[in-house]
Image (tube, rainbow, N blue to C red; front, top):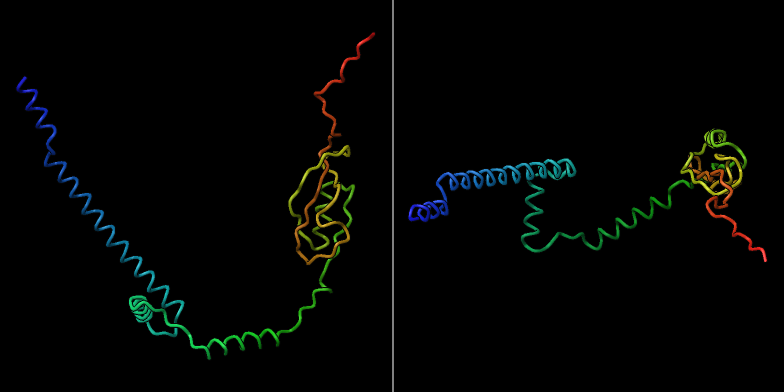
Length: 185
């Protein structure tokens, strides 16, 4: 009995192998953390130097940004710089050539009662795209076009997707229900 208790006490103590394993995993975690931070910082510097090529090296820009954050302020542009930027944008909008949209609009063709394949071809030939296909209860043959969204005749920009609403070929009557039996008097 004494040997069983001493064996249990020995089992409860951590073995040196367990401690070595723990140390090994902690060391690996620290190395992975340092590698991750280094790779992240390098990628950040590369990104800054690529996005801001005129501001010297990426390290300089990063140092200025980090210094500003550490001081608790982000450099702001002056009121004169903001006004000049707004005026530049307003001038570019004012001087932009007007877009002639009315000449480029396409009328959606009437596709009612066409089969799906013929309707798709007609849309593509008209310079439009086939959008989604929806099905609706209808006694017409399955795959027959019932309508389009936007509706036929509407004018849209080229390459606009048009939704086809097709018949599913069902009449809408429930085939599982039976008429109630009539009771003879």
